[in-house]
Amino acid sequence: MTGARLVVDRSAIAANTRHFAALMPGRLMAVVKADGYGAGAELVARTALANGATRLGVTSIAEALALRAAGLSAPILSWLNTVDADFAGAIAAEVEIAVPGVAQLDAVRRAARRSGRRALIHLQIDCGMAREGCAPALWPQLLGFAAAAQAERDVEVVGVMGHLSCASTPSAAANRRERARFLKAVRATASARLHAPLRHLAATAATLTQPAARHTLCRVGAGLVGIDPSGTVPLRGALMLQSQIVDVRRVPAGTPVGYDHSAVTSQDTTLALVAAGYADGVPRAVAPDAEILVRGRRRRIVGRVSMDQLVIDLGADGDAMPGEFVTIFGPGDQGEPTVADWAAWCGTIPNEILTGIGRRVERVERAEGLAHAETVKAAS
Ligand SMILES: *Cc1c(COP(=O)(O)O)cnc(C)c1O
Image (cartoon, rainbow, N blue to C red; front, side):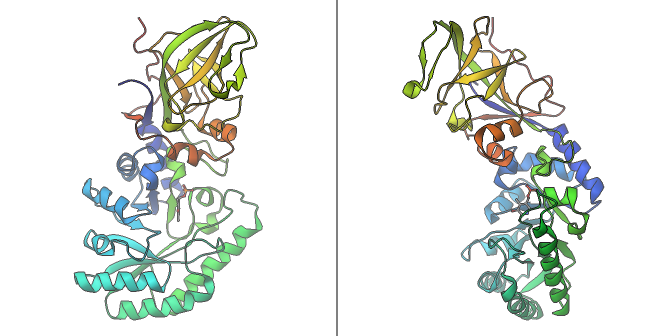
């Protein structure tokens, strides 16, 4: 192995899961879409289920079937499917399906008929994002079709789901409005004589800050890997991105560095070349004050981040060895930048940093903490 690696700390995912499971005993869905927010869908799913989660959630049916193929038998919900999605595959694997409209309901129903089995569905209401989910004006119609499909045993409505637009800002007026829309949809569902025992609205942020949004189930993804969009609780960062130093060189003041010569050294200094670039998930559009931890000290990136490499300035007194590991981000307890620091430097949210880690980055699993991840490999 050479170059970048993503170290995944199972104990952090376990601790974070327990935090949410304590808020919602027996009623926690672990959302593991986008390969478990970069941490590995199967790993996050298994760890979460072993620590209090009772269900799994993903977007595509393909993601759900991959979890089934890995041997996970917990209930799984898939949402955001196109009308030509593999609903038959989902039904055969007992994957529950979110249904945002009549067209999708019809497709699911036909797949159920063909396979001779009932589809388990969650009706999905758009509470105010103009995004996925049924527009409130069309909800009564969807309920009518769903009731008919259930009467003919093509589907069983097991849930109603919504999503909040502004949950990371607990004081936003939209939260109250959207919670009310969800409740209205739930009441209408009951009036249509659809039982729907699972009623779920909250993701990580609302689970933490809006008890009124918790209903009978919470869908938590970001929180499991240590992201708290609400900034209200200390969760443990579960991921550490490291890479190795390829080369170290002394350069005089005035040395241009990297593409476009966007940086020029201001003093005699030591530069280190690190094997990590935007193909590995270090965004090119990063602020000039972005730092990496080398031997316990924060060191600035100089010049452009390239596809496969970047350069850091170790300073006039700096030293490092080729082969040595440096830490791009981690939980922060050894002085390294966090995913939140990187998100700030890149004008984004931590979720985008984590889900953007490149495919060629080696995934390394640790059962117990990131503190002892070795930082020196090939140094002689
Ligand atoms: C991604 C997603 C979640 C999980 O959100 P987090 O903020 O990561 O916990 C929940 N519900 C839906 C519909 C989602 O798409």
